[in-house]
Length: 398
Image 1 (tube, helix red, strand yellow):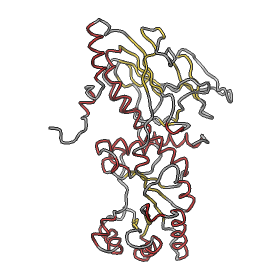
Image 2 (cartoon, helix red, strand yellow):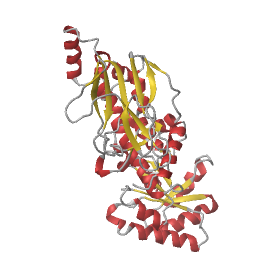
Image 3 (cartoon, rainbow, N blue to C red):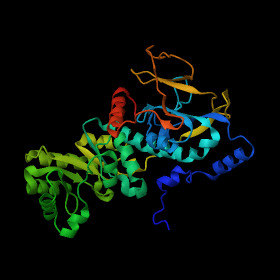
Image 4 (cartoon, rainbow, N blue to C red):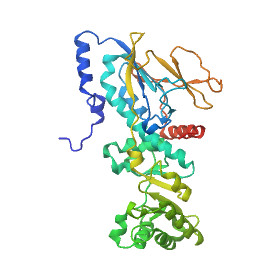
């Protein structure tokens, strides 16, 4: 009996999370003798959600682990790459392609796209928020309570890759090799019956490496409770967290300004203001400018819209062929290191110049799997995150 409705790694690897028509396709190909036909299938998207101008590819490591051991070659752009749906000339950008017998890998299309689509959506939203607030603000992923717990590791990894500083879940933190980060719930204060008791208990019980961040909106005005927390913990207080409910928010930016002012005039300029509750890429700029030092962000990241990738055959037995609306043939993606301009060419093109600055462009699609074996050393999550942040420094758009 399945206690939780989640697929195991073995079930995913066996192709049991695929759509049934791929299994039926395999049966037909085998029965009619087409199981040796070699193809090239590429992964692209025609657009990004909400008219986003760019996305961040993530989920690649899972996709590669899925195809590991299958007799195929796989090319992909590196995980964490900032991409656009179309290149400078309006050609759809391939983020991955697979070469091999279609029979061997067709049942993996569904889970492979799932790995890439959802993770890339989360990483893109996280990167958008990081780009909006800049490098110095603290971003914590609080969103696992809004999603199925079985995907908590993926959600937290994708948020971290996109530029967040830390994650709240134990298993997500293990996945990225960090310690989980968080503050305290209202429940602690309610059970103890006093804000001050709860703040002091937090300080007395937990190890010193845990930042003392007091939740300051349980019973009284945020300004009053912030002052109370500062006076209770003094130099030990790292920050205060405002998790003000929507019915009480009013002008949240003004509340933040009030708290900052009242703390500052009492000599608590080093106490940081962390805010949470309903934070997204549309309202975070105003709150950051009002004086918030950090943000606990949940639903808007964990429930980010997916990137709608699709996989299409573009070559059969070495001949370019594809469905209507797609472009046939194996392709190479080139990128200018100066301005991140993208250009798609036939795969056999040896060099490419940037149409904007005439600089030499770099081939972006790298071979990750050869005959079923992973041939590239996969980067750590910290390396991917730094790669994302370096690209955010170059682009101007959100």
